[in-house]
Image (cartoon, rainbow, N blue to C red; front, side):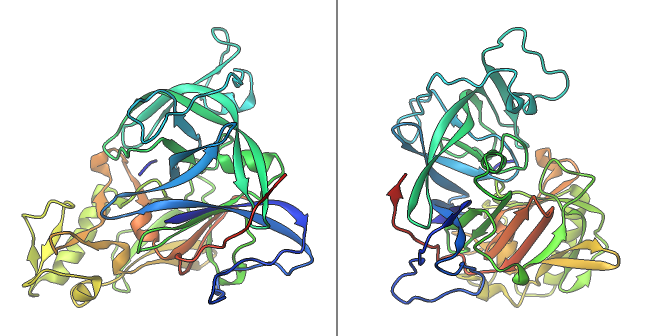
Length: 414
């Protein structure tokens, strides 16, 4: 599904004596977990990402692809699998991707994974054509090719990984279109970059992210940068396996049950905002408006930043100005026999202050944009948390985190 951050890949275990570089104050955050020096370690790769929920409206990663490597700006999307680049777009942010001639053949298992039902190779046996469609109505049409990506490990080693990616030559933008070079597919399917690197023995099948409410943050592949004992986790759904889903959840408002339950939930980094199905959306909106009744705040009909905004007697400047009017949200999930976990959503996780000084609801009606009965947790609700999708343990986990300080490394090539 689609909408400074850091991308981290946990790679091949290496026996190296390497100390991480931390910066002048040398402070270590509790949610980082670095291995001891002099032991067999699993390294990571750090790549910068940029953007924010508002006002920019999206995050993007800069990755290097091709030989010689060139930088491309991609939308990091846990809601889709295929990584693709725009191959023919003179109006792209910088020179468009020039593919090589290393085509993925039609009979390749990766090609078959992109096609549902009867996959036949009669017409074009030497190439794999693809078409992917997104929840917002956008799509990409192209061919699958093999190319290389340059990855910098935090141990100081630079490696080149071979990946199958899409060369998109016909794109239809959806309403959430962003002026980027393509999509970085972080989903759990075979064509996802996580699955491809895992199948090559380079990483553990784990991906996560940490979006800062101030903009930026990081994404990571692998499990060596966090302390598992500090992670709150819930099992992935066994019934709905296409996306990262904890199954069905219930909305809690102000610490109290709302009766809005049995909601099929998906975590999606490609969505800037959070979306609820119509019934849940209307129910939450009623709870919020009831809470505002009798308070010196009214709907801001002249502010079109989002469908629902409110204004006070004076323009709001920060979330501190509205804390007396709103209550925190949470989503409650079943984690086993009589056990529940809660995904806490503070005010910053579902509200924003607009350029006009209004406070706007960052939760939207997903049914109106074609999401049917799915309920999508988007970037706004995942800010200032490390969110971890562990495909080996089949769990989704999270913990509060300062997402502003990524690890750094020096680099040598191999």
